[in-house]
Amino acid sequence: MRKFLLLFTLIALFSCAEKQEAKVSEVQSERKFSERLEHNSTRTVNLLPEARQVAGEWLAYATAQNEIQNLENSTGMDIMDASNNLVQIMENLNTSIPDTLRSTAVEARTNVLYTKAQVLHQLSTKKQKNPDEIFDVAGDLVVEFDNFKLQLNELFLKTPENFETELDQEFEESMEPDSTGTVPLFR
Image (tube, rainbow, N blue to C red; front, top):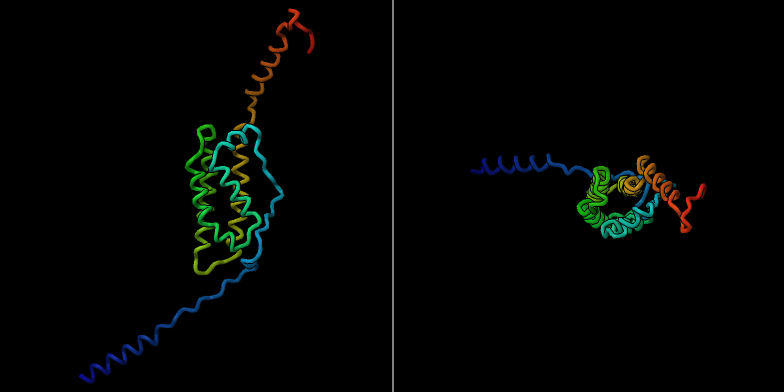
């Protein structure tokens, strides 16, 4: 019995000695979480008046735009804290597209925003957080929101057919008699 106990103790001792804890390496990063997100793009996208009018009635868009503006000058810690909210906001944006804005391109852009927000949240909840990765994805999210606004603007751009129709209407209106009953030659 003693031999079995001694043998069992030796096996247990060797098996414990073989298990060494894997050393967790430090994440090498050029940035720190206390730094602010610097938006490198000089491009600023403003919505066209028609797009602004429709988007102004879309609560999810207003919330997402406000959150992106807050993100633009946030610290790394602020970005990590806001990552869960960003996922929920972008999911709401993705699922609540108004019928007047619903198109394949707009849906694709909202999917990209939702995916980027999920990636940011995933990076923010990792054990080993890398500030470079978090800042890069947050910067991508800002750029993608600008791309989303560009896509909204494209819905309201005049096509050549619409432009011709508009010119025809203006011409016909100019050919209508005025209050004296005469058709002016030039207007």
